[in-house]
Length: 114
Image 1: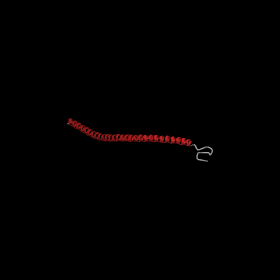
Image 2 (image 1 turned 90 degrees about the vertical axis):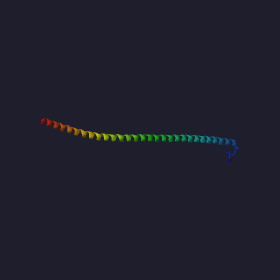
Image 3 (image 1 turned 180 degrees about the vertical axis):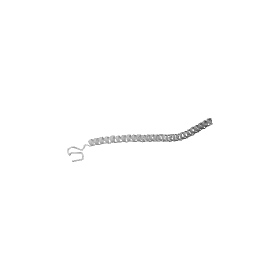
Image 4 (image 1 turned 45 degrees about the vertical axis):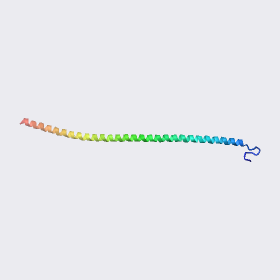
């Protein structure tokens, strides 16, 4: 068999040219589709990158807030401890004052008896 097919039909270059043109069209369409897909992929990657940066910034913001809250909690805990110490001191002073009042009242009663 010859290049163009069967022996009884003559070689038809226009038929082959049409097939080549058709395949060339398919290749060009596929190349275009691939280019579109690459652009879409790039856009998605850029969006993901931006989203990742936003998430990281969000995490940093929450870390900062959490850190501030921890510091505030530490300050409040310290204040509570200081207040508890103050309360104990005041209670101790009150007990001493009550004892003094009691002893003064006793002295006063003793003086009255005299």
